[in-house]
Length: 436
Image (cartoon, rainbow, N blue to C red; front, side, top):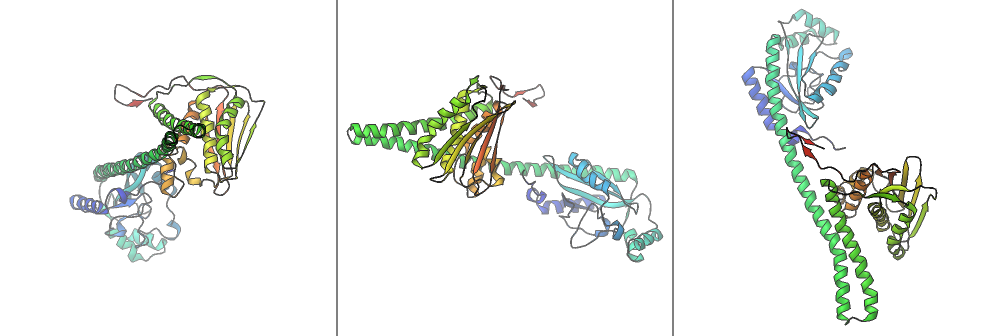
């Protein structure tokens, strides 16, 4: 889950300060902007004008009479802050002193990034004697109670409603500016990830292509020596298959994203499919002196699946395991069935994958972000393809791994595929709303 951005990362504090000053100049009512937890992020002219339930100021301590037994925010206000604010509704609070407090949330993409709080008010002039008593009950001096009473604003309920409406307009503008800033940041981030992904794809494509060209040049330079042909043609063909597989993966991901992927569902014997997949990677495992074991439940029934795409998933997971496991390591493929479907797993004793990447690596840009954090470079599009194929069958894929403990990728496929032959493209209704 992404950490919500800070309001001050999207809207400059200077802008919020300017709005705060203009609002007070126009209405005569002081306000303060806070973050999503109620911590003041703009200047607090007079702390006694604000309720400590809604505004917190570290340098000022308590903002009102609420000390000792009143030191914990009221549960109903806490619920309102967590609930009503998510819908953009103003939060109204009436404290023991009779003050009306209002906080208007600033909501961006469903996240409450901050609040605009306007000063506490009373419907009629305060009774100084009553506030002296409240101060004593709160463990404070009577003079403090009088000071709080002096800083109160006397406004009718109609005036309070008008001020609240005006402040909602202000917070709406702030939220709109924050949204635009957030979208601009996201676009720049995606463009950067896209450029990095393209660079990584080109790098991955260039490796087998260079090997193919090198093999052909060697054959030509040796004047088609039969021994050289026997050695380098299989090498060139193997790299050609690798190159074609990468291109097909790119095309299939694009088709799945656009809804153009055809799913050819047929009866599939997973034991036979697994044997074919293992045969494609056992040569690389042999070169790296890795043990490649297979344990398929012989009692698994035939499943309904797209055989070609499922085989490519198994090959991809096995290939990744071999690639990222040290020489002399161990890679295994296992499968078991229950009444719902078939679950197969590819395990290795490689370096493992940190928890924060367990979801990201299945995303198109997930490996790019991982590489930026120092992980091994890889486009990771094969895992994106695996996830899409699993979901197209009505199944799912997940990872179990810890650094230094190896990794296990598991994929569940229902016995009866829930996939349809063609995923419908997104359409638009008459109002222009995107509909699946």
